[in-house]
Length: 295
Image (cartoon, rainbow, N blue to C red; front, side):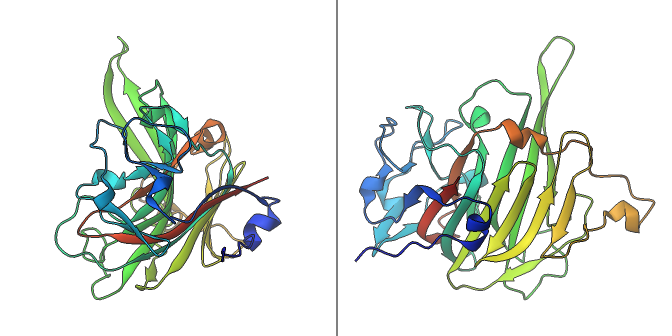
């Protein structure tokens, strides 16, 4: 019997009632393991940045669940919805993207963490860009990770983040560095107070609503945090359904340097995003389904 698919309330409220992407992981035919980028698949195992193509053993499916356990998955880049080799697949510009996911705590060293996210097509396809955007719908953080003080003994930390990537060029047009700038519910380089959310080892649905100038993150249908941005002002961040923006750290501690900047994330207005599932063999994840709703 087919699963009944219910339109999420946040998607419905935004007028996003058309199911444009739906993968239930019923069988391995939904993933192109050929490395050739053939059309007609939901996910592709040929990865950008000259990474090795994933194998069926790393992406096993049982009872309509993807048991994702890649050998190596640096930067949480695993299965993608758009093939670099074939230049075919699914791209998202605005929408409500959601996935039902379950994870345990990591065992051993890992170079990729459980994540459901999207990245600018231009970057992943090796096309020319100066500024591009990244939307992390879900990233799991190990409480033992350095820099996460005060988290010892807690469960996994869930974060949802917006990134703005910039390339810097010298006078001769040569690229001298690639700079990543962040905005998130967490404090790392954002200039905003931490808002940690701890996750257990049960199934949860993680989602992000992406509209012009606005992105909101949801877990099990509950609003977690949100960001508003435009081309000229400093972006604002909101925690849960609090109507007041979260205070920036330099508003609380005047001696701190400003960490946010006018126009941050406006690049999202012109980007096409490739959806990504990522993790590592020592921190695998289970995925029940992935869906995208649009107007």
